[in-house]
Image (cartoon, rainbow, N blue to C red; front, side):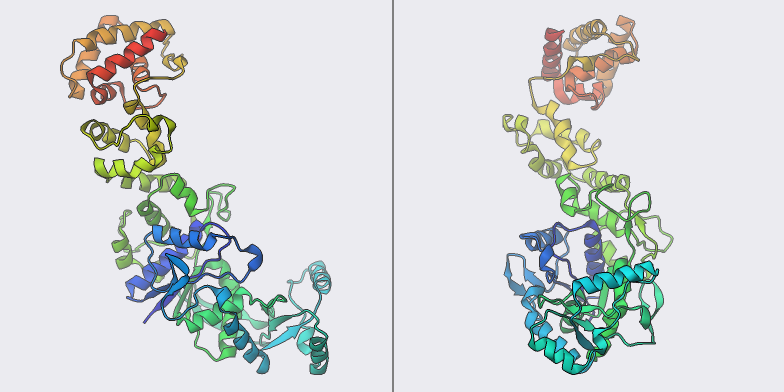
Length: 495
């Protein structure tokens, strides 16, 4: 059985790149009827953030990526699966036992070099334009000297003894045949001076004992892969199949960063992006079916059916927010009026003005105007501003919005136009058809001898209180006669 894993560090919110890694691992596992493990890699205690583990789990499950083994989402002190613990800080005994085997067999050694010595060594290497690497001084230290330093309690780390003068070859599922010269690979630290394992040791040990067959991760981990393969070989374990997915990039092709984009999944949730849209969007960041199809909208079921590591690209993928907006708008338009009302309600509850309306959005009037809002927003968070003028009776806005320099609309022109609209709309009986309203108001414009915009602009602003909104005819139809005439009257009282 194929098994893969998603192994985030609890150092903060889940990065969108991390969500994509989790998605690809999930799709791969489900496509092959395998299993997905969620493992929390918290061995770097200096970067540990309280509550981050719970946040990571919530976000992964919000996205619909249910895992087969890992911490219990209802209580992270409990577990789902038989290969735990799934939080690395609870697995220290295992790491200690395994690293001792490496020491005993000569595949690892204790390094007593001070930070000052290492810093000086790196400065000299940089000065000589050499790649910064440990010079292996302690690798060749006499055993008796090592024993004495241990007895004296001198602080030290444990390093991997990388084989010398070899060419390491392996095949990456995405990048094809790879090779590295072993002399360019650093003797990586496996255990830090505080006794905690580094990512490299814990990662390999856990993947082995959890039965991971496929490691899917970001391409930034590609340089570490030779160290991991040497560890597998030192232990005498079978190596998993590696697949390194491309980086996410800003529009300027730099690595995705929060200086140019939000990078935390939670940021996009807070802004009203739907999980269906975010999943659809990130799935296509570095992958497509490759069958000549122009299909862009994929359900999770369709993604599982069509996903293949062979179709993942090598080049970085540009994180285009406009593209994400396109997907989100598409999924928003797919909702029924009732579903849309339920989706936007959490954002409405945050608005002070909404708290006094006593509206639950599940009524005939709301179902009439909600579709007009759906077709005009890109995120759920935009809904309250466009819904406010349908639910509030008192219009409070800057009267300067009524004016328009290019259309030569002055306060006097606006007042004249609104007075005429009020008179004519009072005599309109059919408020249910937009075409009937349009025909009626066009006669008003002709009677005034004004341009269309000089009448419709102030009318639309008076009805919505917003610079941008649906057109005047549509708003009149959605508001109905009573609300329409009341709002025009409120504005005329202020002019």
